[in-house]
Length: 166
Image 1 (spheres, helix red, strand yellow):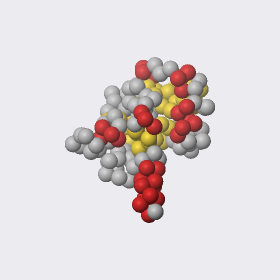
Image 2 (image 1 turned 90 degrees about the vertical axis):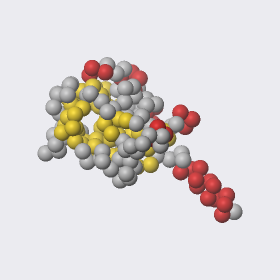
Image 3 (image 1 turned 45 degrees about the horizontal axis):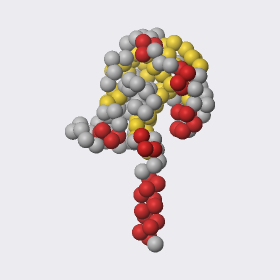
Image 4 (image 1 turned 120 degrees about the vertical axis):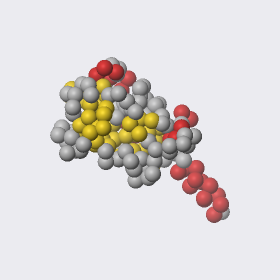
């Protein structure tokens, strides 16, 4: 009986979102600040598949580069909240290893926009290959990370550059 319970728990843990912010995988990323090199937008997504599946925040804010011309309709008719000027900074707060059924696993990277009022909500960066193209992190998924030598998640986009947090 113990073996059956253990096997069942092991299966369930493979299907759960895991906050990996304090692990070696994300420790060098969480707490770091970046600034936008180009204009960006903050989108509130309501009723989308992304919001329904994830439930990490009550009101879902997504940030993307204006130049990437995202189809807001693909995010459930998201509402444009504001345009961010180049130089706007963000601070990485959470990294989640998120399972998405048979499609595999992806990253969910949450950040604070510095000096921008979001009513306490974190914004999500384009980080889940299931929904986002292009994504702003590398390696592309937790599964890919297991096959590379660095074993660290990093920002990998021309949209952002490293910045001080002060």
